[in-house]
Length: 221
Length: 379
Image (cartoon, rainbow over all chains, first blue to last red; front, side):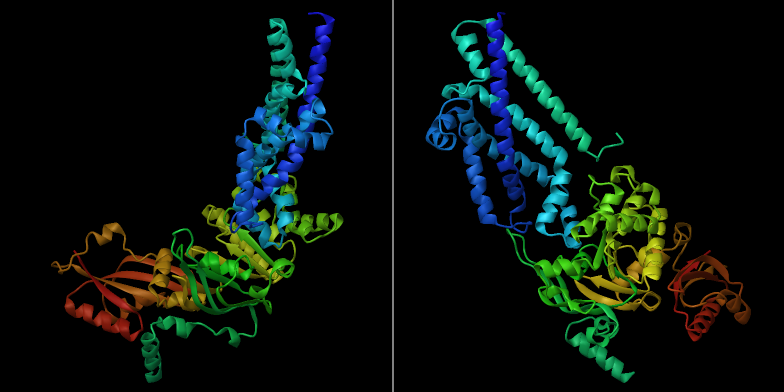
């Protein structure tokens, strides 16, 4: 493979990492509190607000059921408003963030709900405030699950990022389509797929390792 | 005597068990109370097609400061609801809960959280954070109360020593045995120097030997720190070993309450009697029970069971019976235990001879205040 093509792959890899990294970060910033709220706001729970919970749940479901490629083009005006442009890697971060936030929120909700309810009662019994319960009990106890959730989100974002070529987002998926498919360069397609597989493996292994390290439940296994 | 029977009659007329009226000290008559329940009822409303539940009704009693009080009842009797009223995790539907002079049922938000720091609680399943070491679990209530790092460190070291696991400082709960986990739970509950320690079935998940050790630890803590301990349990053995006072709950009501020795030497409510039977056993050995017949075989013995209640009771009854009535009394089965310093149990005797001997024996026993019954005959 020629040095030019190698450079294309390296550049596309960095574009993918940039888009996925920032989108995962922002998705976590928005999705973590949203997920914690969804997990604690049903009737009788820590931040009980059943109606808000229901409405947010519907919004989250609606966003998650919109196909990503449609989301990308549908929110172009919003993207332009936020990023100043609707094309390029930076612009692509907007739809990626919007897609990952509800996804991360649902994963966070599931992880938080896994925490034994007895622990919430225990913390309440010695006078912990709801926020203290979130930060001192729920998040630390759910941490292994949260790390695995984030790993899953990053892997999914790598897949989504292949579609942002539609708005000139660049990245590995875009490279594979334009060179590998449209210019009939199977070796390019293969290289892109290999790089993606390697990235997913690295992300997953790192996530598994971190989750295992913070998990104190099964130390003696 | 006449007045007493009048009272009993009246109380029956208004549909409440006799025991409720006689045994309970009204909350206002107990100046030394750490916890007072005044006119408490707790109703869980109907929700999503499930009918409402009256978990507690007409609860009026006081828990003495510095005491170890057992609250015993079958599952569903309302024990958990009752204990959660004490630390404000639940609110009564009617009535007030006064803890250390303060109406905890009227507090909310920050005020309630401050009050909760003076009430510790331990749990059946320990409820330790798996992500924190033993020391950090004990530190949690102190962090929440806003203690400084230095103060927390010193306090945690003291507490680990107090509960006898100073060497487990850096161990995670998954590396501890059940008994060690509950010791961490106890240290955590005591961290903020509470005046009341609530124990919600704290030994129910432990083996008998560990249970004994944990109960001994609680007794020491009560003695040395003066902490009032409220033990919620369905196990008679826990009440017997540790509690001085007991409240028997059934179907959301207090059916008996008072000193452990009094309640269990003279249990009146069927629930109390069934709890007592768990300790002293009311069934005969199978080999004996299977031989008992209703008609006396030639040369057989009458089987008489004597209830033994009170200090030193029963120690000499067999010897005296044999000597004074001149009978070769056989001891067929015996079970005597000690509850609150009082002997409680039963003796099963074989009385040889005819109907005359049995009559004389029963007369002698009733004269000596031993409740006795004839179970039948054995060959």
